Image 1 (cartoon, each protein chain N blue to C red):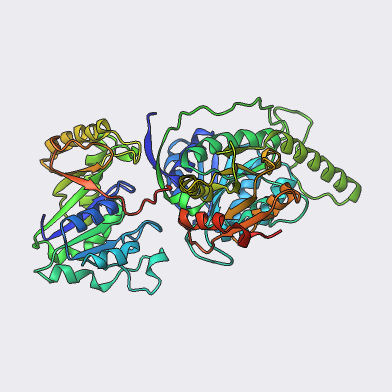
Image 2 (tube, each protein chain N blue to C red; image 1 turned 90 degrees about the vertical axis):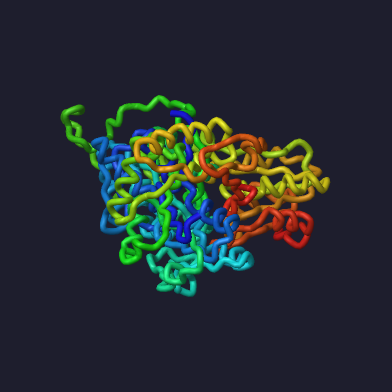
Length: 356
Length: 216
């Protein structure tokens, strides 16, 4: 397939098909509607399952069931819709089932608006669901990167038996870019799903159960410890980030997704004025790329965290920075997207931005 | 350019950018935004800019029209058609679904109009003549209006080369021949070519991208 021009949401859908998705369950919400629209047309035509559920709660529980049966499943939604799915997401994580959840963020809180935002960082990385669980969270900045991550996400979910969330904002969902679907992604050895609740034909005498209820606290703690060990393995193996312009920076910006894209332009503008600014661009939000912060030169005057929200990733930056550098913050919200010049100003007046 | 120009085409083929560029370059009086499909990048977002250029934009009457994705449109959409000394561009939503809105103009078939199909062959659903003709049939069936011309808007955004534009022209030439439709415009990105002597099918429409920020 040569280069084609695609809208982010359509690209997510086609990348899911390329990633081997067997079934999609979802409920419509702006600004991600082109994902189910595309899949409704193309999944059914290829003998796969597309189901528009009666609600987000139903959809995520269908994902739970189909993932339990060993199929490659996904759902997609936007902020308030992802909020509704939290119970099911916690159950899926507890039952250690693989699935891919696409979250196309819009302005919040509450019903909020339909314009782009990054205010669901906590929701993605801290979870709205109950218990000590983690999603593996990727936040791509371009449609090409979204495609590559989507294709790989089903393997990563299967490999760790854990839900993977692909977190973008409405702008990446709605914008268009020329993309290549054939770019190869990392391949992993995936064992048979001998845990799947798909009958006993392949494992006579062994009955598989997908479950998240452990009444005996001894068992539940053991299960929790096992989950924590898995999350630690993920922390060790799955960190992804990009260092931009890291040769000899005066300041370092930390930004992901659309905000990182805007900051690239800010960095170019600042360079013209003789201010050298580097950027840490986290691609995995869980696991958070703490190691990137060890590469910041000592002489750097400060770190500026930039978000389309009011200081959510800032928490992780403060933890990773561990008091070493001054940390500043710049954020817009509610669907407002800044121009690169606003970040240029924030860097120039860094002292006013410092939070620690 | 006819007094009334309706722009239709496959979803994401660039109708709105073409609509704004034509409106500015051809100095029309109205841009009518009939897009009830897209939540982002709609011509109503450029209201201020268009007003400064003497162009009235008609979209929704709702006070928060810019950020709603509700299918409300203004009753003023008939104004340009009835005002026979005014010129207007109607920017429809994508696909046959977007073209459905033309049904409300059933009583105005006698007006002097063009219904132009914007095509980008790098959109997978319109990458060959057969698919484009199928789309034209669907649009004509659902709207009750005849497509009267083609616009070659084949591009890969900032990756576009002259070859890409010509590849689009090649495909549209087949459509043109089979259906007897003229290619009225070929859109040209400023970086694609500076050669003023190149001849394209129809008028070369130099594009200024109004929705794309420099960091996209």
